[in-house]
Length: 442
Image 1 (spheres, rainbow, N blue to C red):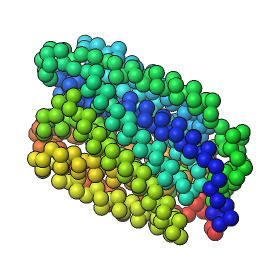
Image 2: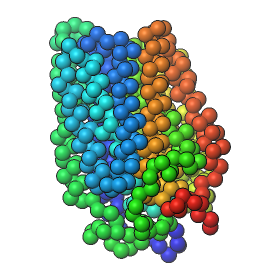
Image 3: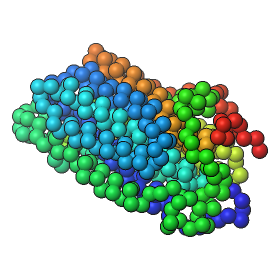
Image 4: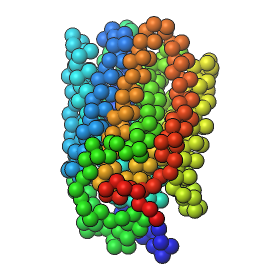
């Protein structure tokens, strides 16, 4: 960025607030199932493997959706693409409430499939919006802020579920599980409000009447203005080494899925945490996760402002994240509930810091009109990794009980260092690509 161009105006943060709100709704909707898992399994008489099939339906659709939604959003643009995505996921989120006991496994699997397909559009749209509205040196921080909303949604879910849902007999397994349908309906109202605000307020920076020329110049100060809006097909970005570096980095999504969908089962099985007691542990875990997301995004930006190259700043930050996450390996060994919760929180915080930076790798390297497609391809790889891990973990837990969590936490703690080495081997430098996906040599 030229030294003469200073940050003027704050309208871009209004757009960021809308991204934060959409991601909060997304993760609130997504997290309800994980919080209800111990009680739904008992209420519907599922095995752990049955539960893993429900999760896999979501993850299969999420993988398909990421591959297709990224391209759809690049074609429709973020305004229309985001509305399409949130409309689909809100409809299927509410469909969970219509599932009856007689077809619970099929019904939940179908509802989760639709939810996963729609929710797949959130991150491609949000990352594309960030690339459009923020200069490179602010993108990791902006991504860290809206990525922190995943924790806001995950924090809200156990408190809402705990205040509404209960067993008619007072304890798990006695009587009926009451009011479990209501949490699935709440996001429909929230989504409708968000769509109205997004449609009224969103335009691209170059066409936005409320954006000052000074702020527009600042947004474009370290990147090229896109003159040709024709999207780059995902089949063209797929063979790029940089695409596969991002795909490998996104394998760590399996760890985040593990915390989100299996965390309540671990706490219930090891420490006998009841549905109405889940709120505080999840609050601690995801507040730490929020802090990690924002700090991780800020840290690499601070390194860049010190004069570090983008390549060095992003990868040193990723290395710090990987080291911070290592103690998660100890979770399944300790008998101290709050130590386990803190270590899971540390792992979640490290993951969110990692996530904020790997998302930014895409907009650092690829032209803006390819961003959503690349994010979708990488997200598909992350979803497939989560699918495989869910299937394996469900089978292991049915076979050996909660001791299976030992191996899950061991992998969750050590995976990031291995992945970082592979990413660096694939993409040792982060050279920006032009509209023809050729390196821009400076």
